[in-house]
Image 1 (cartoon, rainbow, N blue to C red):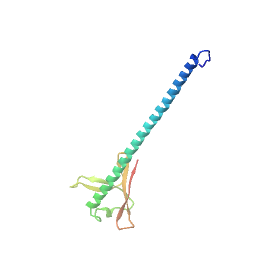
Image 2 (cartoon, helix red, strand yellow):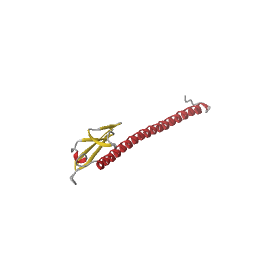
Image 3 (spheres, rainbow, N blue to C red):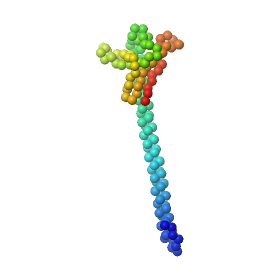
Image 4 (spheres, helix red, strand yellow):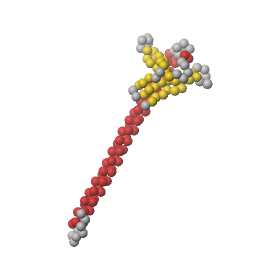
Length: 137
């Protein structure tokens, strides 16, 4: 490919070919870098979406717990009747008038998440404290 002769034409053709190879290589590296950044951005976006959904479910469960606490009699059908360390979830009883939240034993699956509420005795005050509102992915 590289021939040294009396004319510079053979040397110039070789250098042009070499410049094309180097240019294509640089463009390929830049393209692969941009493609990698694009995939990273998509993964980050998906992760943020899952995290936001989990946060919304946790906030929803806490608001339901407050509504349940305020709408029940503590020692009759309220939070004073739950068992320490047992898994619960809230379900909406639509047969009641008006609709009411009911505490049910077990865990609840919402989409890709599993959530539960676990109550434990509080050493700071009598009654129970909302200890754990968990989610798993």
